[in-house]
Amino acid sequence: MKEELSSSFDVLLNKLNTWGNTLIENLPNMLLAIAVLLTSYFLARYVSKGVTRLVSKKVPQKSISNLISNLTTVVVVLFGLFLALSILDLNDALMSLLTGAGVAGLVVGLALQGALSNTISGVVLSFRKNIRIGDWVETNGFAGEVIKINLNNFIIKEADNNKVIIPNKTILENPLKNFTLTNKMRVVLGCGVGYESDLDKVETLTKQTVKDCIDQVRSVEDVEFYFEEFGDSSINFIVRFYITSESAIEKLRAKNTVIKALKKAFDKEGVNIPFPIRTLEFNSGLKLQNGVKAAFAAN
Picture 1 (cartoon, one colour):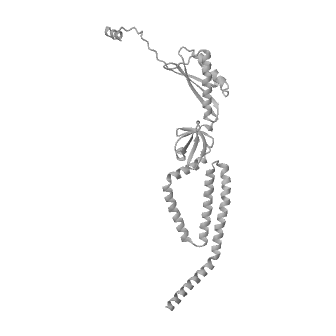
Picture 2 (picture 1 turned 120 degrees about the horizontal axis):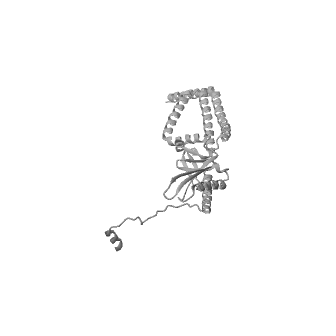
Picture 3 (picture 1 turned 90 degrees about the horizontal axis):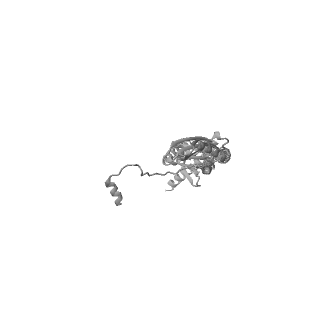
């Protein structure tokens, strides 16, 4: 029994001695690996701050700056980790780590396919120069001012002050009209006048009224006027002119101004703007049969 205990104790001492020798031999590498990890950690913090400042100058969205900053931090730290494992000669552990990271990334990517698609779309939208915060856009049946582009969604504020949240993926997959890209906007307004009206007078009066009430219209020649059709109750026309604006709300304001001015001008000059009416005429000259006359007389 004593011999077995002595033998086991000798084996333990040999193991401890071997581990001690290995620790002493690898101590410089261990210290160097720890130094590399600490250096990569502090370096990642400084690089992250620098990247944040640099990206903030190009991309107004804070969420995008934070995302790129965090990705930079992860890359620097992972680089330091791999370098430290290489210094310790742990190539097998390094390969296992890379394999596990690849499998985990594949699983996470499949599980979060929709979310990742919106995130990537958000990054793409943030770097597009033709879509900026404050632009007035129309997309997916909604129109309003872009107030925020997040990693997952696109937020616009409509003219009635309601906010619409649209997934970024939907924005990229559908057409988008940006009214702010051009500083000129054409206003089209339709109206109708009575059949008894002097059409030349209506055209002249309409052009002059638009020119007088819209400061951005410099001359009567800048106003386009076209009669379109003989309607049921009126002769219909459209009037078109340009305004200098980057917001669709100005288009509505210009229409509002012209409608009120045209109504006053037409009323003053006696031009009729008819509403839909139906005239019933009974003196057609047709002779009614005796039976029909008797029926009307009984009623």
